[in-house]
Length: 153
Image 1 (cartoon, rainbow, N blue to C red):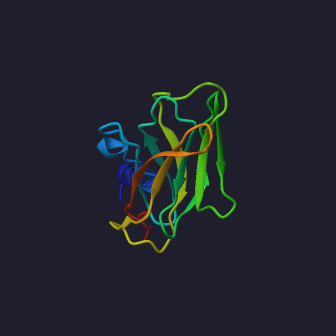
Image 2: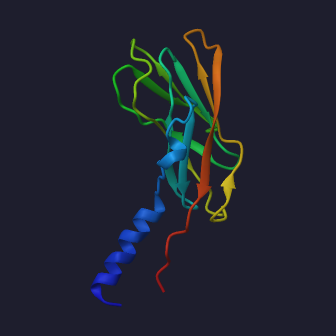
């Protein structure tokens, strides 16, 4: 192996380790709430949620079976993220008159190390609420297990 192929293997490993595929499935289609990510086994990745309509006060993501939500890292004025103690869900709450922002709400998910690459994880769901916490819409998120990190011989 020459020095360039070793560098390519390392860079490729980093890309595969936390690969987020926002593509068409993460973009709001027909005004719906959507999210998507491809995450390697034993790694964390970001599910990007789009399609939050004007007037929304909160968005909650419930993690697929066998995964955990480990973060709600958006650091923007007017939003507060929180993760449930058991890691099964996380939420963003609009805290200051900023709703319906065109941005994407990121949720960090951890996929177990024994997850099978190519598997689409079940039961990832999204819920949109108004100021009183009343559910106004639901959506789905697509989480696929990506390729495992390459191993050195």
